[in-house]
Amino acid sequence: MTTGRARCLSPGGLARRAERLQKEDWEFRSFLKGCGDRKVDAAVRKLYMAARKTVDCRKCRRCCIELRVPVTEKDVARLAAAVGMRPGAFRSRYLVADGDEPRKFLMRERPCPFLRKDGCAHYAARPDECRAFPFLDRKDFASRTMEMISNQRICPIVFEVYQGLKKDLWHDEEGGWDCCEEE
Ligand code: SF4
Ligand code: SF4
Image (cartoon, rainbow, N blue to C red; front, side, top):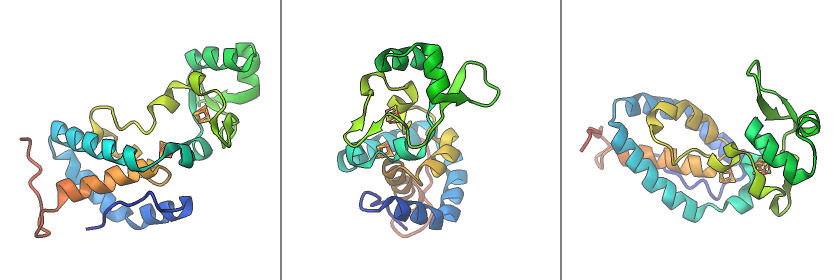
């Protein structure tokens, strides 16, 4: 069984490793759907707490570099005030429409234009999605595994958690199948 240890990998190394594990990760996704949500969420919580202690977001910033952040109207009001612009001017300068969704936007540029060497220039006013990423403290992990398989290509924390889950829930010590029953 392959384990995590993503924190030492370069961005390219992490993506390549996630690519190599893809087949196994999709098999595990099907397995997880048959597990109890409470058991999976508890295991995710434990792994997330451990990963946060070993992966330093301040040294990573890959989500700010590689993702185009969704921005809501509420985020626009907060960010525009922080930047010192009117909301309309802020939208025109920094955002594009998010498909056909009314009043939903994405950052126009990638990396995010507010990323600086020492971190987010408007950290206190950052969008809600930036606060919530990588979404590991939300319930129902098993229903969000597609997003996790994709995000582990860029986020070492997600990689650690998904690979750690495979180790904890999938195979028992003899290499057979764990039952993954709700306790
Ligand atoms: S959330 Fe993930 S991708 Fe973003 S900075 Fe932290 S470790 Fe890196
Ligand atoms: S707003 Fe800040 S936290 Fe969000 S993506 Fe941009 S730099 Fe990163």
